[in-house]
Length: 517
Image 1 (tube, rainbow, N blue to C red):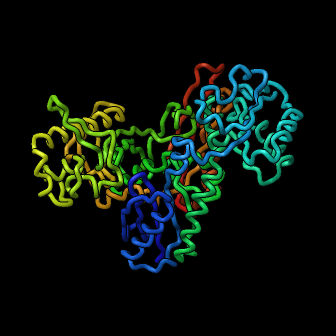
Image 2: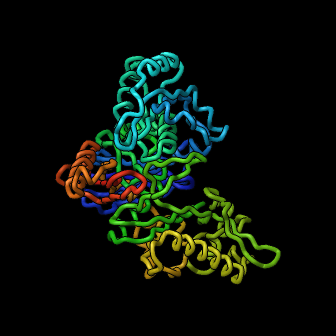
């Protein structure tokens, strides 16, 4: 029998699971995330292999979910200097690239340039592509940077100019240059799409590091037969090569993995998923087995973007959240946390800090550590703290709901033991088996997807014809990404009328997904 290995690296814990071909969970472990990330991954893999007793050569696929790209942006570390080319003069010169970026991240732009070209919403040229200016720009950066972000006005409608600029880049800068085209990354809206493309271009070395590091770890541990996949933020997988080309798609893959894992563990019904970690709780919506996508621009590390992102609310509540009693007798919980130091700082382990975990153990919600060490924590304070924790989660659930009706809530994550079994606004609260490692399970059982997006005039193409064409394009993209053609199906259809455009113009967005080939 062949097996899948799923790894999810969180800020506090690294989880590993082994899943059989029939999707039964064989073994799971949770270890503390190491500072260098990779020794923690190796430790988790070794432990789950030891626990399962299987032959490591029987692992045919290995999936990794990681926060490395998110951390690089938020911490302003490991980002590479890049060149930025925008095609859109004279229409777009009034707003230069990175116009709303803060000074502490602008350093990634070695040089920027706006040249003539780009398209209108209907595909008409704003101006002819200025190939001479593009060639001159690329010659000026040769040998200075290894990555270029290329954006163009309405490139999601027509990408001709971006593709020609990419050809020139390879001719002048060489075949090894890293190119990020905005038409392949973001949605409508030049500035936000360009921002996402710039971040993607600057993350290329981060992506090389975690993909090559993961592959090396597997080889060192004797898993030479394992194909490597990386989790992306729409709840599906991509190859390591695809991840190196589009590293930004790994951002928010952690919460997405948890939502996918929750879907699998809870039987696939639509629900609100509450993923409680050591420091934060992520609340997302599960629709047809996949995370609901955010319909608004998303800010990442202070940068406004519009590429696909899951609709997730994060709150400062986790198993390690610090509980404080105010002078007036009221209680606060978080947002700061002892995080990975829970086993040394929490009262239940002999520490001196009251945590959310201590509260749950005091109230008999589960057993951990030595409950006798909680004599200094009175029941009244614990109940007040639990009330605060309950209210924080209930408010987040309400914010995710699309109606006032009660919903099914699925609790996952190692920290979910701190929450009660009943919540306001929830018709039922589920805490399935293996809930503590739902993120790694989500990584291991994920499918491969393709998403097609385009502006279409229903005056030119009848709706049925346009949707059928888009469905086929999405299915083809899923197959190219690695899905088995006989398993690919459309999982999401969206066509939104654009009233600010002339005629009967709509934005069609189709997502198709299938099992790994």
